[in-house]
Image 1 (cartoon, helix red, strand yellow):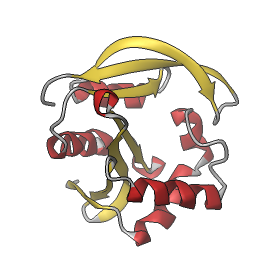
Image 2 (spheres, one colour):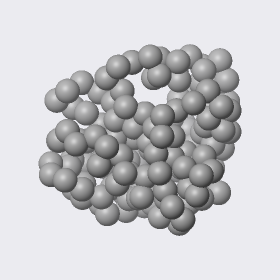
Image 3 (cartoon, helix red, strand yellow):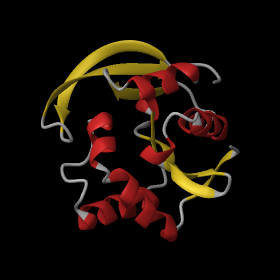
Length: 159
């Protein structure tokens, strides 16, 4: 599949909402909004994202179809990557391709990332893209309703 990134469009948001409110996907991601099924909260969150100049957020396309999103956010010294791929497309290399494309589009370094320690897919994506584990943390994972271990990552050079 050919993966590309483009600016987020209004028509992408209903798809993002569907992807990001999938109970299995949110359980794996762990660190999600308090209520992924709350459409008003989702809409307000995305309105803030799209208006913030410091946030780079892109729609992920696979062969022209919307399959998720990827972005960079945070203060200049702690910029962090985020990505979400629809669960129907997991295991096909799309998250890795999307993150690589994002890293080419956003050359600033260092970049940081976090993943639930047991989210093997996301850990693998980050490592394939050159991120290295720099530490661990433990935080409350809304999607699991419990404290969950996290891995902290950093990317210093090009992907």
